[in-house]
Length: 197
Image (spheres, rainbow, N blue to C red):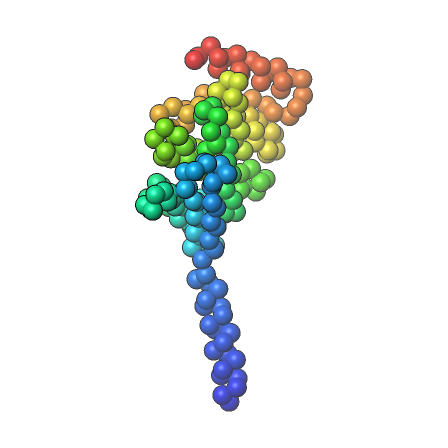
């Protein structure tokens, strides 16, 4: 093999080797969300071949605060995130946005998330245990519950609450096909949840 072919093969090998170990990093400056708090989110993806099931991890989430020339790590967590997407929504009715980090997407594109609640009084975040099990979560501020609306062979909805930074399951599942029957089931479920509070 001549030296030109050997050089080309070495370059191809190095490119493949470097790409297989390349890290994908997302950095978000949160000044517009948490004003004057110096909070930055860094999501480092180190594995692209996993699917997120069986408690697999492929990313490191770091929530950092730089204030008065002091650098403090508020959260450092090993998680799974297939899309590396970060969202900000209020999930505990304190009118302050919390951090959602996408977890997995199933075959019907039902997404799950890791949730980190922000406490403005202590200026800290805390992870909600079990939140990553809820598909397509949305917060119902009127009833202070989390709703899951799942697309599957038969669409369905379920209801949850956050208690002591853990997910509480009301164990209520209803048909969610948009029919008048499912709307009646929804109202009945909300009434039952309201009575248990």
